[in-house]
Length: 326
Image (tube, rainbow, N blue to C red; front, side):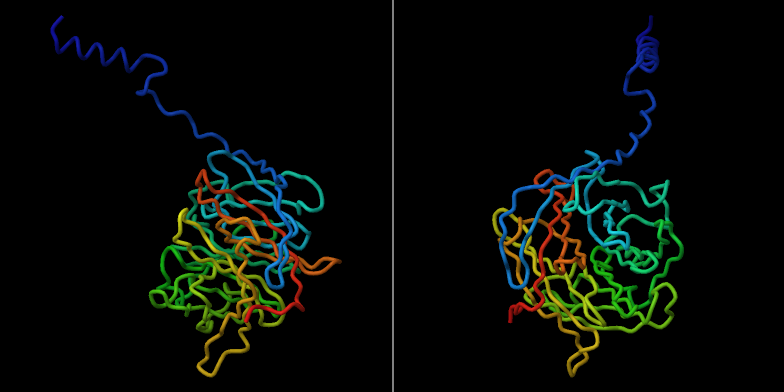
């Protein structure tokens, strides 16, 4: 047999052999929906008006679970979290019993243009259960019904030049029905002023939102927010720590959109730098619950799909009468 024919025969044999690399790839593995919430040891510590009460580690689909970047409390007592891969996590409060969470896609087709992928913020109407999601790269806000089905989308012109990877990092529905979206990136390198957009109501329906500038203290960046009454919101702050090992620092501030200074700047007032009060991680989601024993702040972390990071959920008591850090 000639060498050329020998090579062709060998190639054909390999192509027809079972289990070789030339065969079609297997179909993608189905998303595993169950997420466990396991309590972890956490010493009760206090920073400013916040006291750590409990901590849980979340674990799910080995390849797809993670990247949690937003958190809201739903009207029925559950939580909804969103990931920067465009997926959602629904779970019950772990301080009221052990149950698994449900991890799934917002739509059957995860490549859907309608929903996009990089979800970074969530807001909710506590009366209707309607949810709004903020997306980076597209600088869009998508409205979903109470069953989390996408309805309408808007791309406000005031957000058009926001940085592609640090856009609608914070989106909050204020207690009076207005919405505030805050850009994560500051306007200047190492600056403290961040662009924001204030909507008079549903951002999908508001054709004339207002541009706002928010001043964030101490080199932090805003990564989530939750309403606390009228035009006020708690804002979760994150700052990169360039030490060894590289990590993140976490703080909580409060702002009032109805109390700008003489230059029209809305200043976020630092309430506490959490430091060693909480397990160190990349916290990107914040929400509040009103309970019989007071107000509680819940934080959730983004593991960045890194083996040395975790998805943590924390419960902190907020003593609103305690003096904030000056």
